[in-house]
Amino acid sequence: MKKLLNEISNCTVCKDFLPLGPNPIVRASKTAKILIIGQAPGTKVHKTNIPWNDPSGNQLRKWLNISDITFYDTTKIAIVPMGFCYPGKGKTGDLPPRKECAELWHDKLLSKMPNLELILLIGQYAQKHYLKEENKITLTETVSNFKAYLPKYFPLPHPSPRNRFWLQKNEWFEEHVIPILQQKIDKILSK
Image (cartoon, rainbow, N blue to C red; front, side, top):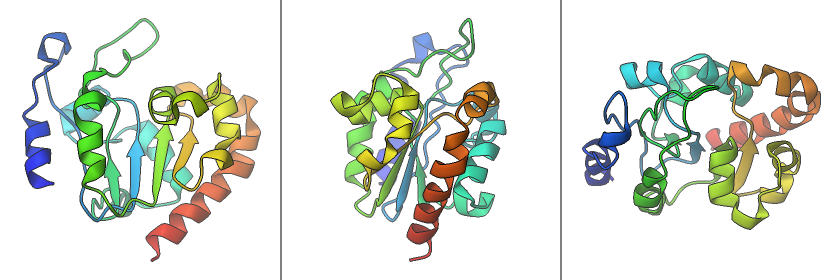
């Protein structure tokens, strides 16, 4: 795993397309039980080298009901975004994650994490990639049908403050889905 993570940290495949240059943000270990697959780092994460070190991360940790210490304990939780580097700014937010990362690195990383019990798929990019034809047409449909993807995957919306309207419109998510997510996380981490 150490050799693979070193290779990833030195990756420059997308350097010509990255406005802030390559800075792959990935955390993983052979003992990780939970894998978080999000989109791509934002500018704050790019600068600090700490994944989910922003308001989205604060919300995600609330959803999971875990502390920062547990969240960043790579022996328990791995963090592997769809795109490892900040992709740049688009019209309505950050650009989509670069596709090269998942193609080059995801299978290699997953093959070195034999203890994974749950993979959180955060946002449409992760859900489309991993759920393939079982992914529903909309994120709302996919998330509301989360039980169909268990025990391996748990699809979630992105916890970004930009999604506050989605959360307000879909109150069932925090009322019914989050308690089940928290139970699963607690059960896995308490072993």
